[in-house]
Length: 406
Image (cartoon, rainbow, N blue to C red; front, side, top):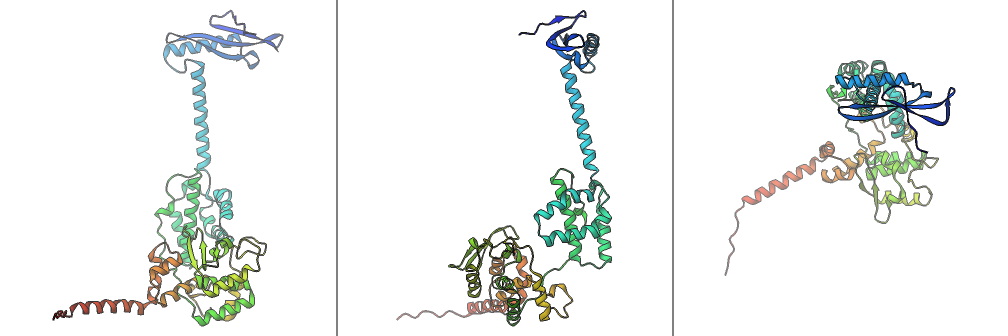
C-alpha cells in the first residue's frame, strides 16, 4: 500500500502514519521536510515520532537549514549534516586510535605482540635468550616508555650498562638486534612509524669467527664417545663433520630429501634463504642407510615424540667435557661446540687444497667474505699458485727455437 503523506499545520513539514504501530494514543508518525537550496527543491526525512521527532522540532530543523543555506555557513541539508557528523566521528576515532597507539609502551608491546610471535616462530633456545635479554637489560630501561619516545640515548644507556657488566661485544650487538626486531614488528603492525632508534646507534665491533677445528684423531675420539652416549647424536655429528651441515639443517632434514643412490642431500631454505646440495661421504651414506632401515618418521632425526628437534642434546656438551676437549680454553671462539664440526669440515677441505670458492658453495655461504676466514689454512696452496705464475712468467722469457726445415 503506497504511503499517504499528510501536510502538517506548518509549511514545509509533512508526515505519514504507520499502519499499525502506535506512539501514545496516535499512530506513529514519520516526519519529512521540504525546502529549496540554490534553486533546487529538496525533501529529506527526519524520523519517527517514537524516535523523538515532533512537528515543532521539524520546524526548528527546517529553519536552521534554511538559515545555513542563506548565509552559506554550515550544512544546508540533512545529508550534508550527516556527512559532516560522520566525518567528525571518523576523525575522533582516528585521533583516539592514534593516541592509543602512541601510548603503547615497549614492555606492553613486547608482552602482547612481539614475544608471543617470537615463541611461535623461533627455536626455544632463541626465544629464551631473547626473553633473558628483555628481563635483564631491555625492560628495566625501555619497558615503561612508549615506543615513540624511545631514542638512541636510551639504547646507548643499555650499551653502557652491558659493557660495564663485561658482556661480550657480540652479546651487546645481539641485544641491539632484538630491539631492532621489536621496532620492525611494531612498524609492520602499524603501531610505530619511522626508523628504528637502533639505526643511529653504532654496534660494538665483534669478531665472532670460530678459530677451532678438530684434528682427525680428535674427531675420531669424539665420535666414538658420542656413539656410546647416543646413536642419534653420533649420527648427527658425523653428518655435520662429513657434509658441513648446520644443526638446524639436520633437524629439518627429511627422508624425501635424501638420495642415497646418488649420495646427495637437498637442504631447503637454509640460513641464508637458499636451497643447496650436500654430498655424502661413504661413512655418511652408511649412517643414513642404517637409519633408513630403523625409522618410520618423515624426519631423519626426529625427536622422541616424532616431531622436529629444536636444539642439540646437552649430552654433546657432557661428552666434550668428559673428554676434556675444552679444558683450559678461555676464548669462546676456541671452545668446542656442535658448530665446530661444520667449521672442521670446511677447514679440512681447505687444507686438502679445495678452492675457497668451492668450499663456500659447499657450505652455502652467501658471500665470499664468509669463506675468507679459512684462507690462512691453505698457505701451501697459495704458494703453489704463485709458483705456477712465476714458472709461467719465466717460461715466457726463454727464446723460442726456430723451426728447421730441410
